Image (cartoon, rainbow, N blue to C red):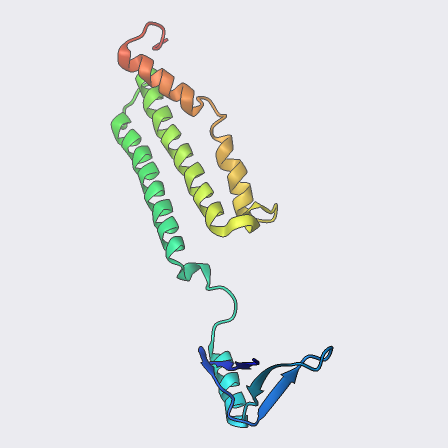
Length: 174
């Protein structure tokens, strides 16, 4: 039994309103199915529907997952900023150099660096593979923010130093 095929116009399957056409196999002559030809009005409707439809994927800014990622990036940057501003407030205008001052600055630096790394990672995850090309500003940011972890102190050394100061371990304040 042969199948009957329809046309997809404006998001719906519709039968053609023109004459019925048998579709046959060129190899065997077997009737594969039937289809009704479209009318001029149906062709015009299909063209109008296609012109009004979207082409390609939705812009990134329209996607809910992107909204969430950007919200998380904003929150992470805010926390990093608050860490830096809190460190400046804690130090005050008349600070003196010493172990506690260094600890305050390095803990804030640690938070800022780890926050920056997280934000760049989120941005790269959002954009996908194109963010890894050398021509992408994110690829450069990817390398730059990681460099902050190599500048003294590393994030782990910062925690060890802060812990020694908090516990009053001998040698931490020298």
